[in-house]
Length: 258
Image (cartoon, rainbow, N blue to C red):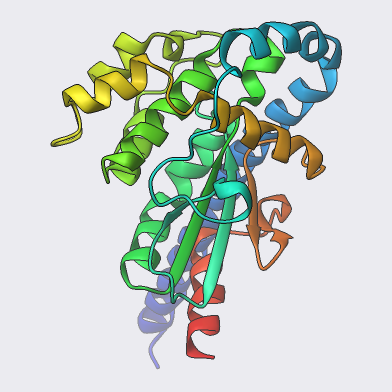
């Protein structure tokens, strides 16, 4: 082999090695961003226990009165899970989330395409539990109002699209913009067929407020410490820093093959 050919092959190998290092660095930055956002939510919970206690009375008075009305199709204990995907899927992903939580948005941004792909293929069933952690941490009612609006979207058969729209338009954690029903209804206009008189009545009337509060109590009694809490087979995979969308897909597909 000529010296020129050897140099050419060596250069190609070097370029490939550099590209691999770039990909590894990008993946490390992505995981750091997501984990970092999650830590913010968890630390926020630990640092403001006194605020949670102080706000608990306000939260109860604002929206816990009246009967608990679960959204259409809700399943699981006390009807607290909103299912997405086929009932017969071999893998179930349980997600506890808060629409004001930036870590939840980070999770959605990274994993949404994979979750949609697996759910649409019938390989994964996702059970969403909506909570109001940030309302307790920072005050306000945006978590509650957004969760109620999402439950109203479930009544209309539009949960997943509206769920994604809320995260796509999430305000800063300290901005309680989702406390406005008008804001939530305007976002419903981005989902085809959702903004109807029945939907507006459900949002404005807080039809599912008590249901959201019950979900929050279940979250607390379950011993969870932050959002998102993402369970696959009972294991919190979101705490696994080696987890990636590709790895999750491999796990789900392996379970699907049996």
